[in-house]
Structure formats: structure tokens, C-alpha cells
Image (cartoon, rainbow, N blue to C red; front, side):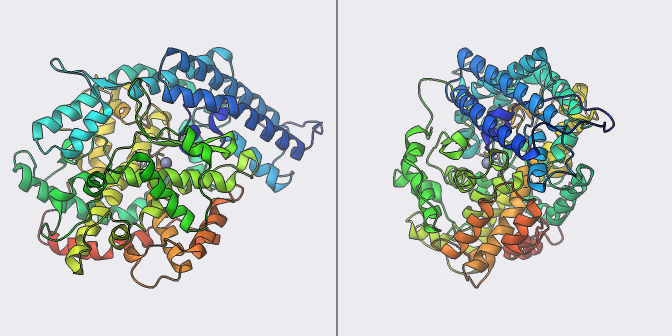
Length: 605
Ligand code: X8Z
Ligand code: ZN
């Protein structure tokens, strides 16, 4: 299924694929029969009409995984792809430099309206739609069935990783989940061929170039732009890595938790390769001083999924934003159904152009899930804010903005704020409590950064042909070691397909958006705290209840993608650049502490 259905844009499955043949050189064309504005208006109307059906088909595919729902979703995807090919082909009759700028922007968005462009022929569209629905089904219905014992689902294995500190048990879960991925390998290789061909028909060199074209800057500059941002945060990550590696070595012993070199990937509390928040209590700087423990509080108070989502809604409402519509509560999937396979990976859906917004989650009583609820509601409030924009502008200013809104709200969940909700018993006072809290945040937000960066570096190189099926897995582990300083705990080979064990690979959701979001959210927070009149260190700010901050945020959200992101960012924050200085400012206390801890240590890997 498309990225846009899953996480952000309102173009949803309508834009599941596209293609056309673009002539090499401009040719003289007669004056178009339809004006550019009329053409754009017609495309907007047809897109929103098509999205109703394909949105529902995709929703059913993800919430009732079976042969029939896959077939129906694949057919809807094919129809969208055919429409998109036709619309993009027709749009080439307009000279973007000569038509009004709003129509020109809309036509550029149209061309970027899918993450998985299909070549413009029925057979290729069908093959691609079948491959993508199959890969997502394999992930969603994935089970680890050991030689002895019962099969286990993704949720079962995530729970093991989050709570177990038994080396072998974690290794078994880590390896077990990776057994779902090898069957996707051939499909993925074919997927790359088809979508690259689709991107080429659209005039891009390959799908990497197409993905990199979505940032209101030349595609060729985007790699350097993301490298620049990584350079700003890399020292923080290295300092965190150095400290965590030492703590793990103490827990597991030097033979299993080495003091030098990469950290074994299965010791970080997460099945996926990103956040490390689940090992907070193993690495807490001051174990005898209070650290927020939202999971225990949610369990002790037996919070329901609905109550957890209500907490999230309440925050947005406190900023002056609307309550969630009744249909959200009636039609969202909040918990895992017992009787069927679903895709549990959390997502937000702009059905009916944002008039029927829903989330799809399998909520459990954990702090991590509560953060994900805020994340998803960030998407939902974006949908609500831009739903009156034309369909082609119903999207984030860039995809990092969309991913960063709910995360920005999580920065306001300070210990004081959580204590007000009754989710933290005692607010620790003083520097030691602050360092504990900052460590917990860093294990989530800083540990994520290199993974957020590398996953698309892998895909970009796959799409350019630099990484081929013969070295999919080896190249994956090279990048994981280079960026994250983690290593596979046992030898891996090209019979494995470890990238496929991460949801966004079979679902083909571009990932740089999360890397950008992890930087942008601190920029947004700094601007919103200013608007709220907060004075004090950034890490202590909560914007809860500030309508001034809410107005500022809403003004950015309601623009959708109608303006270049640089303009949206400038209006909200006063700067036109994505910049990690707010992140560095937020973590300043921890960084100072880590530097002292790491003095004289051999850091790096
Ligand atoms: O996929 C997500 C969201 C849905 S857009 C739950 N995230 C990434 C992940 O889980 O890998 C949020 C953070 C990174
Ligand atoms: Zn998201």
C-alpha cells in the first residue's frame, strides 16, 4: 500500500502508481483546450472521488488481511495508477513556467503523488499492485513459528524485546521475527525494477531521484542536505552510544556486551532497529533517583485504549483545536482484533479527504504506545487543518513536517505535565532527576537518528543500482554498523532479507521523513514555546493549554503543501532552514553529562 495512505498525505491510494512517456525535448504543442486551472480543478475532483473507493479498499486490506481484501485493494491501486498515468501525461501539455504558480505547484505535486510509480501498462500495474499487497500481507500476517512451541506474532516478539533481559531469549525473538522477511526478497527485487521503470517514464533517473525531488530543492542537493543535518547530530549520538555500550557491557558481561566496536543489535530493547527507550532502566544514570515510568502508571491505573487516545485529544483541544469527530471514535481501529490478521503498525488515514480521519493501531498499556498515539494524532490534526485545501495540496509542507507534529507534542510531556495527569508519581527534583529524564528522551529521540538516516540511504542505493539483490543484506548491515554502531548478533547472509523485517520496506514508506521529523520537532517546539511565552530551558517547556502556540501551529498545518516548506517553516519559526540547533539546545544538560562520563573512554566503533 502507498506511503500516503499510511502516514500522511490525503492523496491516499489514489496515487498508488503512475507512469507516462515524457519526450526528451520540449515540443511545440497547440494551445491546450482546457485551461491549466480548469485541468487542475478537474484532477482534484477526480482524485478525491477515486480516493473514496481506494481508501476504503486499502483500509479493509490492512484491517482484514485475507485473499479477497488483498485482491480488491490491488485492483483499486491499479485503477489509481492508471488514472495517475493519464493525468500526468495530460499535464505535460502545460508549460509550468508559463501558467499561474498555484496550478504549476499543483501539477508538480501530481507528478510526485506516489512513492511507487508503475509503468504505464496494465500488466505492469497489475504485477506491481499484487507485489505490494503481497509484501504488506506477509508483514502483517507474519509469525515466528519455532521448531518447537507455538507460533508467535509481531506483538508477542515486541513484548519479549521490551521486557526480557535474557540474552538468549532476546536473540531468539530477534532472529525469529526476521524469518518473516526472506519470502519478500524476490518480490522486493522485482518491485525495484518495476518502480524504477515507472519513475523513468515520469522523467526521473530512478526512484531515488523521484523521492529526493519532494523537498522544494534540486533532487541532487538533497543527499547533501540530509548529510548536513546528520553531521549536526552525530556527536550527540556517538556520546550516547559510548555510554550505553558501557552500561550494556556491565549488564551482559564483556563477552556478550563488548566494550569496543558495535553493540549487538538485539540488546537494545527493540525488535526494530530504532528506539532504545525500553532499556531505560538498564542504563539510567541515577538508578536511585526518580525517572518517569508511564508504562507502570498506565498499567496500574488500567488505562483503556480509548482513554489513552482521549489523553492525546485533550492536548490538541487545549491548544484551541477541534475535538475529534464522532466517526473517528466509531471507525478507528484502536486495539488488535482477536479473530483476524491486521497490520498492527500504527498509521493515520485521511479518508474522505480528511472528513473521515481514522487511526489504526494495536494499542497496549505502554508509554511507547502513548507517544505513538500523540504521533498519530499529529497526522490526524494535520488532515483536519488542511482538509479544505484542494486535494493536491492535502499533504504536509514536506513529509518530515507531517511526521513531526505529534512528536512535537510529546516534547511537552514533561515530568511535571505527566504528574498533573497522574502518570508520574513523584517529580524528581534537581540535576540527577533531570539527567535521568533526558536520558530517557535521548534513548528514544537521539538513538533513532542514525537509523532514520540510513534506511533510505540503503533504498536510494538500491534504486540507483549501487546495491543489487546479491548484496542487499550485506549492504544493510554495512550501513547499520557505519551509522548506528550496531552489529548483527550472529552471521547473516544473502539468504536473509533483514530490511524486509522493518515495516517500511514491505510497505514502501519512505523513511527520511522520520529523520527530518526528529530534527524539525525541536525547531517547532522552540517556536511554539516562544509563542506560548515560556521562559526557561527548552526541555522544561510544555505548551499545554496555550492557544497562542496552537494558533501558530494550526496556521502552519492549514497550509498543507500549498507553499514550499521553506515558507511554511519561516512563518512558523522565522528560519528557512531545517536545523538541529534546537535539538542540541534541548539536550544540552545531557550532552554535558555524557562528555564527563565518556572522558578517557575509547568511544566510536
Ligand atoms: O512508522 C512510524 C509511525 C507511523 S507513521 C508509527 N514511525 C516510524 C517507525 O515506527 O519506524 C514513527 C517513528 C518512526
Ligand atoms: Zn507517522
